[in-house]
Length: 370
Image (cartoon, rainbow, N blue to C red; front, top):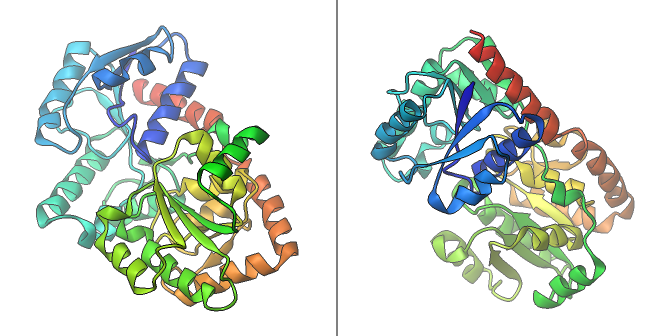
C-alpha cells in the first residue's frame, strides 16, 4: 500500500503545524506503509527523518497555483500511489486515485473581503467545491468548521469527520530557568505584558486588541505592555496607523517570528494571553497558552468556545471595551487567574496528536477498503 501526502507547506504556520505533526506521528505508529511525501527540496531531510518508509518526492510548484493543478496529479501517477491526502483544501481535479482532504476552515468564503480579488474568491470557492465533492472523505478540525462546510456545500454529513488539532510536545515541557532569564533579558521584559500569538491578518482582529490595550492603559495600567508574536507590523498599514494614533510606539512590540523554544518561554512569562480572532477553524494558540499555565481570554465566536471549553474568559471580539474589561478583570483577580490556570491545563490535556493522527490513519484504511 502506498499513500501520498502533500507536505509542501511543511514550514508554514497553521497548516504547517498540522503537516509536521501528521508526518511525525504517522512515523511513530506506522512503520510498514510506504508514504510518498510531496515536498520542496529543502525539506527532503526532514521527511526522510520520519522513518525508512517515508520517501521524499520533490515538487516545487507554488501553493494555490495553476502549475500544481498539473504537477501534483503527475507526481501521484508516477509514484503509483493508492491514496492521496491533501492537508489543505486544494485537490487538483485531474487526480484519479482515492483521496482524503483536510479543510481547516471556510474563511475565504466567510470573509471574501480579505481576499486580494474576485479571482481569488472564485479560486477558493472552486477549490473547496472540488475538495468536498471529489474526495473520498473530508477531514476537518472542529464542529464549527464542519457546520460551515455543510452550509456552503451539499455533501453528506457522514462524509465529514471532525478530528481536532492538538498541542506540540514542546509546550508541555518546563523551560530551563537559564533560558527563561535569557529570553527576559534579550527582549527586555521587565514589565507585565499581554501576549498575542499568530499572524495579524485582518480577521485576527489585532487592531481592536490595540484599541482595547490603549483604553486599558488609560485606566491605571501604565506599566502594561503588549507583545505580538508571529508577524511584522510593516505589512499592515492599518495597524501602523493605530499605533501612531494612540502613541503606543513604546508600549506595543511586534516581535515577528520567534523560535519554538523562545515562544514556549514567552507564553509562561505573559500575565495574560489574548486571542480576539473573528474566525478560526480551530485556534491552536489559546491551547498552547493553556498548556503553558497562562490565563486565556478569547472570542466567543466560531470554533473558539468549542476549543477552550470553560477554561477561558470569552469576549465579544467586536467590542474593544469588552476586551479591555476582560484583561482588567484577569489582571486584578488572583483567584480568577489561579482558576483559569487550573482549568486551562485540564482542558489542554483533552487534545492529543497521538489520538488524532491514529484516527486519520484509520480513515486511510477505510477509504482504501472502499
